[in-house]
Image (cartoon, rainbow, N blue to C red; front, side, top):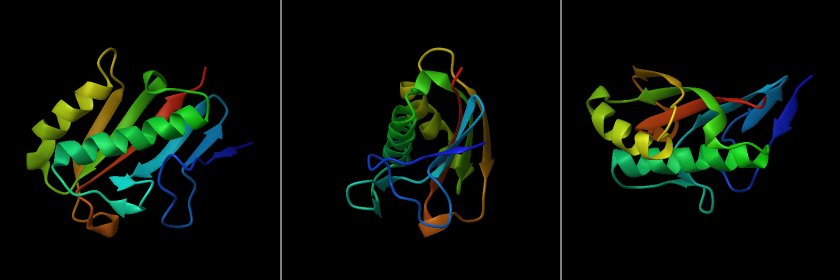
Amino acid sequence: MKKIIQTDNAPAAIGPYSQAIISGELMFISGQLAIDPKTGKLIEGSIAAQTERILANIDAIAIAAGASLTQVVKTTVFLKDLNDFSEVNTAYSNFFTNNPPARSTVEVAALPLNASIEIEAIVSLS
């Protein structure tokens, strides 16, 4: 069984997918872009600001499921430019101050809406 999670406090899906799915004791949060949920548009600004917007979106989805960022066990970061890695790390560390989740970071050729960064997450609900 799976349960779909949806909140207006995070951007609506821009394709045929759910913001998140709960299956068993895990929630799988779809890749989030730096979209402001109020405007539905990519934010402008530094890669740090984009990372912060994405993690705020992930947090909103986690909260909608009764969870929090402290329960994130794995993230995957997709970057158009791996040279942004250090700046992303700095912004990321502000959200995961203790016991950060496991993480993979990969450079990609392109992202939806020509975004510079996308992050997906897995959350433990147990």
